[in-house]
Length: 126
Image 1 (cartoon, rainbow, N blue to C red):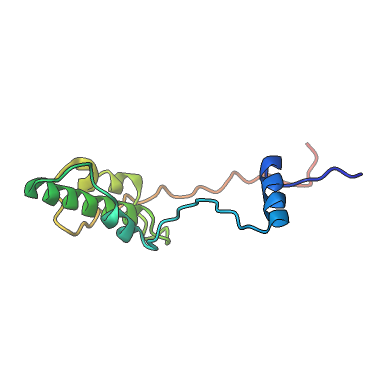
Image 2: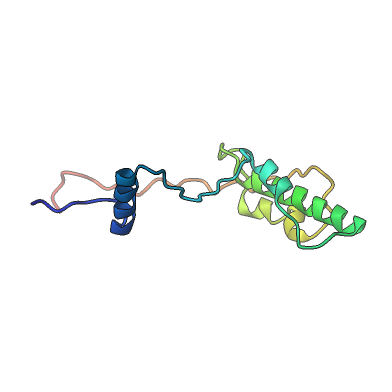
């Protein structure tokens, strides 16, 4: 017969066939994030093991807020609004400065002007 192509490994196909034959449901044990937005994921990610002191907890919260601000600046959909690498390097998350809750990047340098390619005559003998 024709070769059988599948995106699943043979072992997984055999396991699924056995489950259908025996009439039981497979459990894949996949765990997905329950958060839909990046700030929720960053804010709710577990901290280090053990209890944090009050000052460590405040520092961790500030680092997370800075990281979230940094990521959101880099991931803006519009290229016009998205930070350039040089703008991102000025963010407190990178510089280690204290994050004050808002960050406005320095103005981006103007891109170099586009130079049209040299005119190449067409259809003329060489």
